Image (cartoon, rainbow, N blue to C red):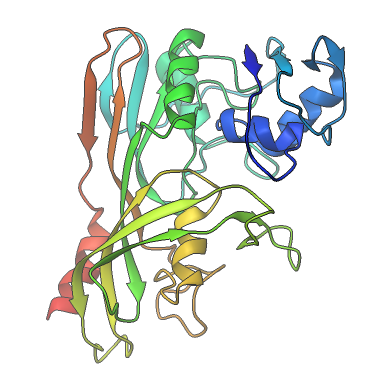
Length: 310
């Protein structure tokens, strides 16, 4: 794929940062690896990840064919919301990792998809993530789309890059809101204190991240939970790692059950954050039809809401 760089930005823009904004299905480290291997060129020449782009530069990206590795298909039940020859939409349960990685080479969504879809999965995102265009956290439930061929993968990835994918999440967070709705527009990058965590950073660092939130219901302090809580809907313009969790914590409303960005002495600790990908909408890669799907809250989420309402 080819990009033509024409920008009026005053800030200098690195090659890897520019591509990270557009190849949203790839991690920054994979993009840097492609640059280092020469699969990314600027004006036909190999360069470095830190190359500062100039107006008129032509960037070519070659994504190598995935290597064959020993990831086993596993007969794991899937809650299939929609499926055709191009895409499959899954309602992912809690505790399921999306793709294999260190410490998680089995029991993942990819293992299940390989059994369900056989050889019909896109290979663009590397040998460890066949079919995967975007991710949701292990402890986040709800809708995720996978692609069965490279054409569909490129189409969905382009929609993610241009923010035309609809993604609405339901979250249970701590503390009351003074407003009914708002927007968090704050860049996110790896935390300098802990590289396993993400953090809000200055505008000239990290990657753009925008979360729109709307209050759905307010709950006063409960006899068991002690602190006021709020049910919110979060709509994503971007899809950064841990985006909702980081943004909500940043504005003083950490997610219930979030062991990484949450509050101390959380009564939901160890149970996974209360975050559900409830709505997913996209334009179909072949038909051009606008499609939208929804998934109900999981039982444990509903049971907690009933307690809060009692």
